[in-house]
Length: 140
Image 1 (tube, rainbow, N blue to C red):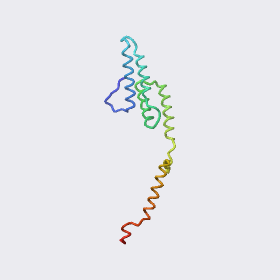
Image 2: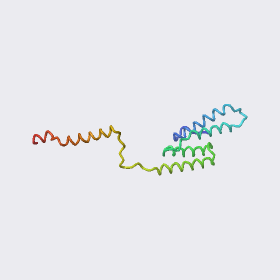
Image 3: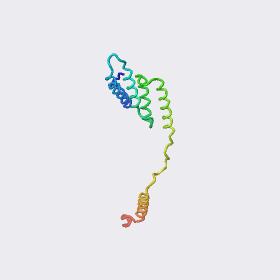
Image 4: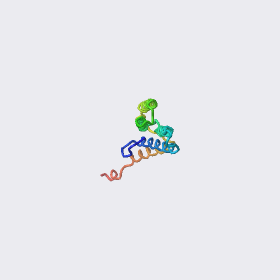
């Protein structure tokens, strides 16, 4: 796998690429020159998939899709696996988009102390409105 580190990329894709390269380098160091590098490639492919972001939250799902696409292009992910991964991402993005919105006029629940403080502040505000202002008392 060869990547151009000068090109602007997604951070998640960079993590996957670096994971692939580290695993590949570690494995290929123990392989003789006349042997196949397939075990090192397989180790790199597994590391690439483990480095992918979880399918939770909109940005992670987008990053996951970017990683699968890149993995497909660089042969770190076989096409049959990419199909399954894209299907999982499609389900996840649908779930995120159909998540119910929080109620518009909901106030957070206050603790007993918070309720007492709110009641006291309301009472203080009411009482202060009943006290004549200094300017009003002087007839201004």
